[in-house]
Image 1: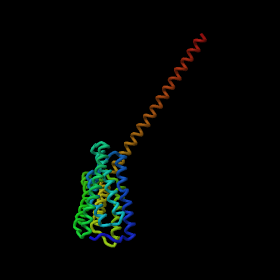
Image 2: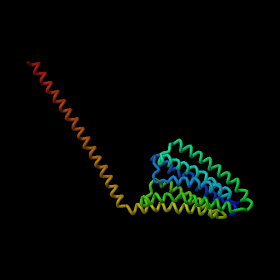
Image 3: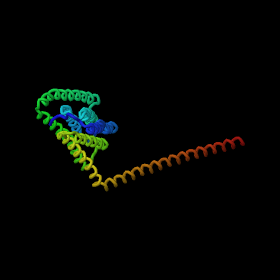
Image 4: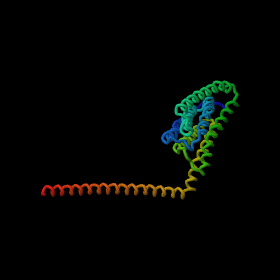
Length: 277
């Protein structure tokens, strides 16, 4: 497919909206991982596949001269995916924080170098009319991005459809980013099919994750209701025990006070009797 030569303003605006969403897409997930100190249910392989997919996607977007926001997207995508991957290593695989951080920085430098080399190498070929290398790069990007959304389905299958460890705000923001990016391609004079297929795959698989959790909530609604009631009972029992303990403590204090006052009164009486005698 020929490179884009004239980008409509509408395509740039839609691409910018999509890029803004994809700039912050993984931030809620990264924050959730940090707060909970747990990445159970969030596959590290998903984050690594996404990070690797950013390399061919970045090469493709830049050489095809897609609208600028979409050219920036892969670079941010790689960075956030690597950060989340490092959290998986630290929290789930018990890697030291320093080790996972250093490894992430090294990978980011390597990925950036690979992308730069591919752009320098393939751009002259593309300008000379050899389009098949870019087609291969685009297909690889699509396969890697789609593959990154497969591991969550294995985690979901383990839990009978329940989604655990994946932040739904992240998922919604990511879905929105893919949607607006797809619309930006539609707004271009020529629709880029490979980039479009990549966004469509992302939208489809993420929609499946949402639907899976909703179905799980419906299927196990009775069990969830019983569990909520059990927790309420347990919380109520704890409160009752605390009230009983508090009442007992107050009663004990009052008895001690009464005993003290009684002893003081007896002592005072004895003293008065001794004085009279």
